[in-house]
Amino acid sequence: MAKKALKTPDNNNGIQRSTRVKYPVQIFTYDDFIVHHYAYMVKVIQKVEPTCFEQAVGNPKWDNAMDEEMATLDANATWELIALPKDKKAIGCKWVYKVKHNVDGFMSRYKTRLVAKGYAQTYGINYEETYSLVAKITTIRAIIVMATTKGWSLHQMDVKNAFLHGDLHEEVYMEQPPSYVDQKRPNLVYRLKKTLYGLKQAPRAWSDKIGQYLVTSEFQTSNADFSLYVKKTDHGIVVIVIYVDDLIITRNSDADALPSHGVKPT
Image 1: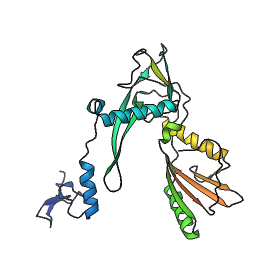
Image 2 (image 1 turned 135 degrees about the horizontal axis):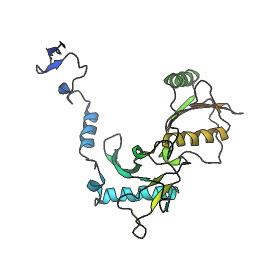
Image 3 (image 1 turned 90 degrees about the horizontal axis):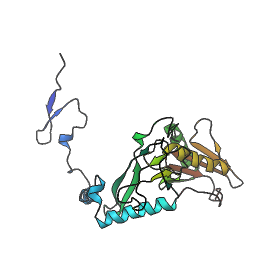
Image 4 (image 1 turned 120 degrees about the vertical axis):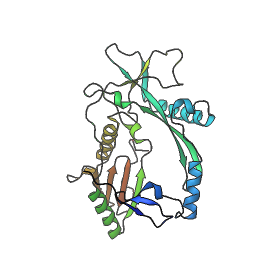
């Protein structure tokens, strides 16, 4: 017979809680929040984010955000509009909506992202290997300790829209997104030339892109951790650790050891 979870009285208002649950949700309150954190939470929960396209369309703020996203993707040469080959299938796409806030809780902007429905992809047909550069936690700790001990500068860099920089080598076709169907060519589909969020190979394509750039910039990969890149120059040493789309950068000289030419992550 299975044992029943024991319940013990809680000191807060006599609430009963299970001893099997370390942090029971029923005893959670905002009482212990500091004032500015509480104010932040109040501001954040006031903004309701759409869960689907139908809820967002027609709202000028979300419409403008979608227009900006489409303009960015077009400028990045993400796709070309063509007729779907007879032996191919096009995957769908959807809009994802997010209200971005500043550290004080005030809204900074409305952000949308066009996401491919990667779950409809088929292995061996429109994607192959999937992987991403994820640094070992021991590597991250070692770099932070080394930089702190030696007094090196230490920076963190979040690559904006990292997955959109990856080059796509497989044939992937995607339906035109809602509200942005070409009225003169509604039956055509996008053949993707760059990766989109949601594609199974998007993390791999970004990893290849950033890796190729660093190797071209004379960085060497560590045999102990392929996410660790090191470059020695006349000015000193530069170390970069990659964790998907976040970079930890440290160096022992303020002189710029990165080249001023070529494609740089933005």
